[in-house]
Length: 447
Ligand code: PHE
Image (cartoon, rainbow, N blue to C red; front, side):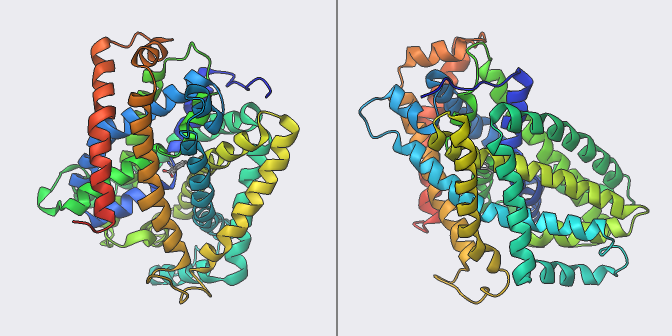
């Protein structure tokens, strides 16, 4: 095995890891789930879960990756040789493969919408037509597959260039651009007449709306948006030198993630209320509501194109991490093999993703267990593979790694206080497994 590549700068790692975290989860999924779950209360629960569960798990993945400094499978083999724990890494690869196969479907929708916006096809239609345009875009049998392919090729091209050349460089430009454009969007949205109601909806928790389902969805959302449970963060932290401050990195990634979720909410809900639209519109919220909103503003389509562009960036940086974990294992650090494996794996993911794309068109009627192909993929990944992966990591780190080694690893490059370390250890050892098991039993309808 060749010497591991490393990030060229601290900020490079933070941006790439935050890029993996911030994606469809924060920008597309959060607003629509919050919209369906009463807004503020869901947001508050999401923050609590991110701080007490998501962050400890993120730090757990970092400590595995940086202790071993190997890829997602070899890391577990190095720390616990002769055991079967490396299956956590193999499971992470499989989960990432399946996740990217349908994540790229929505990536394709963004590409299609961006194309339509830039070519002026969304500017001169009346508000009621956006639902129809969205419907025909995602159901077009050839067009929808083509945009998915374009999204996958973009992902493959960056990952095949390697960690330093590709992922880090791209993230360094993309992530700051994302923040700047988002802040502009928020300023635009909160200065609308009637925006206050939307701001209150997001920031004033209404606990009468909270059910056990809300609590569980908020927890799942915090794992998904932090990219924990699939060893992607093991992979990214394996490229770090021992001088990096891991607790601080985890905190800043968690902080950025909460911040972007706040920005997404502040960009969407004030506009929804100002224009009397539905906050609980579901997965279509962003694609149907935003063009309606933007089209009613002077220069709105330019704003919408800007929004779609940064949304595409955010989605791509998450996609890079899903492909990277697989390619890093298969290419074993060999540059020439990296390119080959990026193409083979990326195209295989695209092929497996085609039925997911067609689930919104010709395969809409083809259901199994009452769900389309897309929904079944999402179900298996989000409700089965993700929680099992998180649970295994929560069991692995405090039980299979030496406490003194962990303390040393987290102290390296930082001065983590003993009390904070203990809190982290307890959250990981007791709180995380218990809560995750409750979620899993609930999604399997045991309660
Ligand atoms: N965190 C990403 C998002 O919110 C999704 C993701 C999960 C990416 C797991 C990589 C690994 O969109």
